[in-house]
Amino acid sequence: MKKFHVKKAAAAVCLMFLAAYSCFPWKKKNREKSSSGVSTEFQNFQKAEPENLAVFREAYPDVQFSSSYDSEKSDWKIEIRLPEETESSTFYWCNGSLLPEKELGKAGKYWTLLYSYPKELKDPASMTEEEKARLKEFSSRTNRREGLGTPMFFFETLYKSASRAELERSLTASTFLGKKTTVHRRIAGPLKRTEDKILEAAKTSADVQSFVEGLNKADAYNWRVIDGTSRKSFHSLGIAIDVLPKKISGEIFWSWARDKNPGGWMLTPLSRRWLPPKAVVEIFESEGFIWGGKWGIWDNMHFEYHPELILFNRTTEK
Image (tube, rainbow, N blue to C red):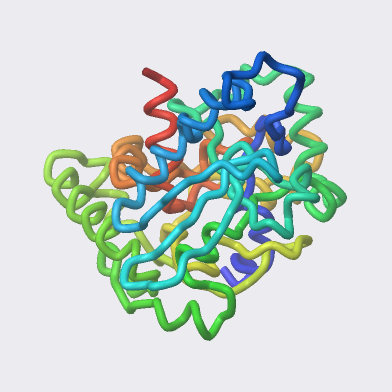
């Protein structure tokens, strides 16, 4: 498995079929003004902070999020303060990208942090020619190098990962289903609850029991950038974990499948892919982890802690 960390290109940011959002600021126009000289529409706008900021508050309840409207930037300024910290970090909402001021001029380079995470695993047999072509373009080396990417600024603040030395002060040695691993302290609790739920499910499910017995590794922390990009992998933050089976019965990672079938890897039938049991995926999701198997460029061993995405998609489903 030596090629595991080398060829695992772009998995942590493989968010296929996303519409790439740029920052659309509030535009001032000639509007009816109140007696104070300020447009009534602008006054009403000031009262309502970005609706989805509540998702971040619920996902990270120990973090303080405060907001104020910056009329000069025509956007919401979001102050974020971590527990036991006296200083806040400043971001701009920018349609959910949470960008520092210096990045506002490059907003078109970044995705929003809140996007559609599929409820069900897509059957590749239902993929259209347009989807197939879009996926081939998205997975190209040029797009990985020059295309849109996940804005890491919020996560670098949340997990204190501006440098490797700083990040590693927040790591803790752990185990997952009996396999040694290293994770960020912030996810130690959710990962332990995930483990407990899986072990409980294994008592009544042969598939889950087989998954537990067949596990070879649980690789989490690995400081590195994503192959072909300058962006950190979420493994670098210690919030992603790869569950590697002792025997890989089928394709497990899109890039390895592409090496064998450059033109049709994305159509690999689910029956020919290694998949963790559905119950295991649902348990991970119940604790705030998303599964890379639901990405268009799939990474079936990969789970990543993003409670804001789980909450956001539950909200939009309702």
